[in-house]
Length: 297
Image 1 (cartoon, rainbow, N blue to C red):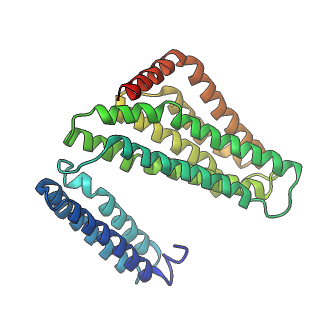
Image 2: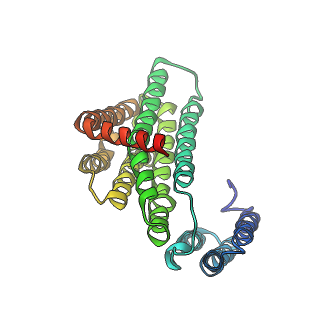
Image 3: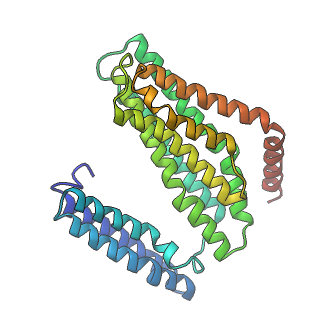
């Protein structure tokens, strides 16, 4: 991966192609008795994956803007296959599908905490300790925003959708697509926090400032889109916070990095607290309903 845009580009493209084509072969084996599923694999994924891998191979012999454009097109085609060729033939188990994506979020949050530790390169000071605690508070708030209610409601919505096209399209949009910006947001925040621990008293430079604030905004915007796709309601408080984080980028270029991290943590904790109080009755109702359904099941 570190050399995928350099000397190991062709090796990466070949390895990626092996993984993807073996996956498609296994799906073909699993669906050999299901004509609709097999058709989805052959007409949907095989074509888009083949073109995507070919573009990665071509990108290995280029550099600069052309290489970036080929990578972007390859990823768009590979990820967009189910969007371009329909979702009718796919089969899924809603609870398992939702759980797997939740674990991806957990892994990303865990890696973000690892990044906090990796950011301590020049010894431990009081400022570094405070910054580490603030970073863990940010990760905890991100966890709460996803797993407290959002993940539960989304899993229930997926399970109650009509099997076939409706259920598959919700799975595709809410999980396969909208979890990408969620995880990207977590990764960007981790990058910014790692740079924060490098020198807590100095302002962040432009890239880490945009990463930590823009990443938090991206994470919240993905939640807004996730909720809209599942229940067609708008989370105004999360949307407002996402806009506010973007607006704070210029301030982050002037404030000490620790102050920027503290502001992010304070705003996220305030958002969590507001939602916990404002929607306490609906939260309890949803949780009791899910517990009853689980017990009945």
